Image 1 (cartoon, rainbow, N blue to C red):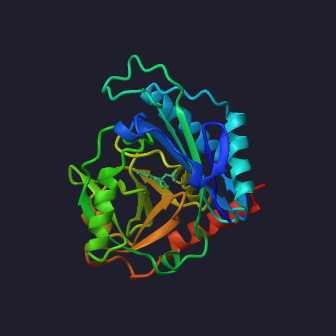
Image 2: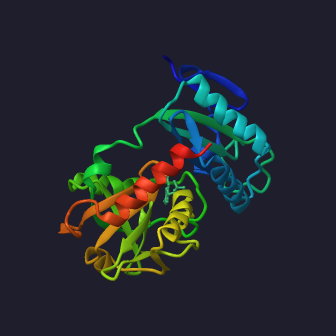
Image 3: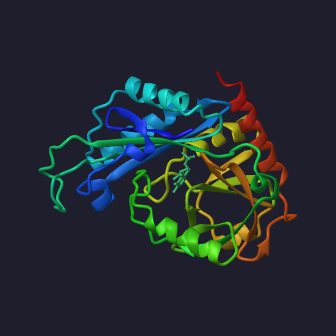
Length: 285
Ligand code: PDD
């Protein structure tokens, strides 16, 4: 079945979908995005993603003329048209085709470009969720507004590519000696005295939708949480390290920079939280 994508008000076969070479998303990375999970054919936590989309738009002074209801409807339509059972819906909103290349967007008064597509992907039952991830640390050379979900992802792509080249699954990013986040995930550690630690929100990391749910789950499981920064050394010595994201849900990191973490297998805290999250998703109506 050919994939049906959405471009500026129209649903079409992916082969027919085009965006202008003058689109500011293409020329300047002047665009925001969201990735929402689909599990058992249902969109998960869409409201939180739409809320963050508004926040990212506000941060870039980017106008989103579509209402929440319209965006919700488009997500559901795309899932139905593509008969998606498990995977993601990707949404990208750029400042549009300004007709020429100009660094300033002060006088850009053109309609934005909205593109959406689905991607089939196993999220719940995956080998990496069972085995855990092997990671390396890399310097965080991204820009200073990581709290906005913009498409300028080159630094993250480079860190992930380097990790894969070194035989690892992914990278944790380090700035001023402290872990910020993964290339596309938030990071948690469990200390020897069973406290869960994660970096506080701020311009250094993305306010993850899964992170927010995880904090609720952590409280529900009566685990002790501390939102503070931590070093790679603390992570390597932790009982457990795990990441959270829409696509990974919660996944354990079992090796960091060649050091085995804990028993070298997904630990009890990450496993309980992942199972709890999946139960939550499956029973959510
Ligand atoms: N990325 N931090 C970064 C830098 C991310 O790119 C992501 C998600 C997260 C986790 O956010 P959430 O829990 O809302 O997915 C944290 C998505 C999945 C992506 O770019 O594909």
